[in-house]
Image (cartoon, rainbow, N blue to C red):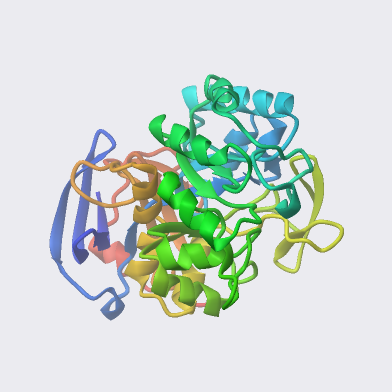
Length: 392
């Protein structure tokens, strides 16, 4: 069990969170304003649907790269993620999917839960690749089905304006694959048509898509006018805070992703993003020509950034946990509620991570002690939770 300010779907409660066999069994306590005390904040584990890498590993490397990614991101509060691939030769994508599938079947310990794959390409517009390598081409359902036999593809990004993609969107929806529109030169009208054909949302809103102009609203305009869900990168580098606030006013379930690369959780230096060489410096990751190439963002920093630009902690947290889980159709993660998985991020009043639990197992502790203990073994008492912390 854990004691603290618990963010439940109904609001904050100060009390005790109990779990059994990896699932939340009881939540005891009274309604509270968490800003009035120094008890820990017990938040639902973050759910990141767009993760290319972390800890020096890139998803396209194959091997155990996805395990390294998952062990890296759990330290920052991500308890579930989609391993995200890049545009590449089909044989490279196939090999990456085989290795990801192996790790999903035998999950790494002390790591984020691997929910499946986000296939970002190759069905993108060659004129809007951003940092994607030049292997984009239109797709067909037979192509995707062949890849789905190798690994569980839960989410797919495509450019809706490409030939055959209007039909492909509907076919993917029928097969339970979520579709996002991105890396696109599509018009406002093509974005609206994509939603009508069954697309679910938009990939890294504002980035790698046609922008908003008052006579050409573009793909951004379609998202702002019609989307219920869209992902956005809240590193305050990819998107200006004012644009994030604009999207928040327009898109009810806007949610955050990291779009993180191998450089996440690592020092400045040279890394890989698919076949591209990228450089981490000044808080970002770029190609040699200066193009932004994913990010170094982690979900705990995303939370702090959203709070910094004016969101309440509960709203910011939902946009990193419940909303992405809902978007993917996952009802047992992303929230602290009876029967849900005991995925818990323990933060102090300064929103720094103290501990992370995945399915009731301690996956990370700030002191790097007690690794692997279960919730029944690791207890935080009210007295311990209230102990004063050294301020830096």
